[in-house]
Structures are given as C-alpha cells and as structure tokens.
Image (cartoon, rainbow, N blue to C red; front, side):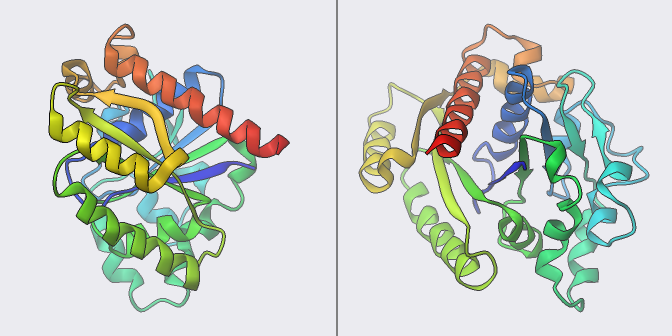
Length: 259
C-alpha cells in the first residue's frame, strides 16, 4: 500500500508546491511508483509537472465529486515520470458543492482506495488554507510533511497547523502523524534563520528532516518550464537537496516496515 503524505502549511509562498513536485520527481527517479495529487485550485503543481491545466477535461475535482475514478483522471508528468491527478480552477467549485454532502471530509480517501496498491508514495499538494480540500487531504493521509521557511512568524503559524492536525486526528483520522518538518528557502548566512532552525529542532527533534533546501534560482525557474529541478538542472543545489530528502523518506519508510 502507498504511504500517503499531505504536504501542507497554512501560509502561502512557503514552498509547498516546490516541495511536492520536486519530491515526486526525485522519488520517481529513485525507482519509486509515485502519484502526486494537486489539491490546490491554482493548479501550480499541475503546470510545474508539464501539464497544460487549461486543456484538461478531467481533474481531481471529478474524483472528489465521484464522477470519475483515479485511472480516468490521472495523467503522467512527461518529464517527471510520476502520475498526477491534476487541478485547475474547477476545483474551487468542489468546496461549495461538497458542503451539503454526507461524509464530505472522506471524498479523497474513498476515491484513492482502489489505487493505493499501485503506488509506493502518494503526495498531496494542499492549498494554503484550512479549507475542506485540506481537511480531505489530512483525513486521507498517513502523515504530514510541513515545509517551513525559517523566519520570525513561521513558528506562530506552525502552532495553528499542529492544532489543526490534532483536531483531524481526534475526529477524522486517528492514525495521522507529523512525518517531518522540512526547512526550505534556507539562507545559511541569515542568523535569524539559524535561530529559528534551532528552535524547530528543539521542538520537533528527529522529525526535522536532515535535508535543508537552500534558496536556489534553479528551483524557482524550473516550474515555468514545466519541469522539476531534477530535469531542469540536475546538478543544482535545489535538485540535489530534494533528491537527498527523497532518500530520507525512503529510508524512513523502510525502517518503519522493518521496525
């Protein structure tokens, strides 16, 4: 069965989509079967995976509304080599349409049930808000990965997110855990960043990934070409750091299987 990871942070602009796309490409390049789910109506993970979101007839929206199955919605990232459940603006409508439905928090979980055995990892790129889409992601995930910029307000936002995760765990998904916090857009010359990084380690201990993702021009440029950093410039620090993080995830998963 796939390990389902929700990549989430309520703050926008913290590298969620960058992390989702680059982890998917890195895990795929390391021989894992990967499905990336774009659960953000902006559809940035879809574009960064080399898929034209305007031209899509079927998206994750249709999976949530139960009109299509995973196999009908899934496309393959042409360069990334992973499966993608794409998104576009239609997804914003799902919120409104699902509000009245019974078990609306479980739509994604139910939709993925049949496909889980086909993958090693399913990654969900969540929207930067605590809405019904994010709740669906957290209800179906085994674990959460939190990308974080090491800056002053980040710790505050993190407390809110941890509370939300606790609520979902209590009410909807008792198995949910925080798999890890990943430090992204990291500037080693910045004293504040170091301080916040130390605070994170003090608070989360071993849950903080060893991998630190630096601020990197190549990482920022890659999505406009519809590529992960790995395909855009494999030698770049950004690409290498996500490869390293993917390996950490694989090691973690294997350890838990044997442990």
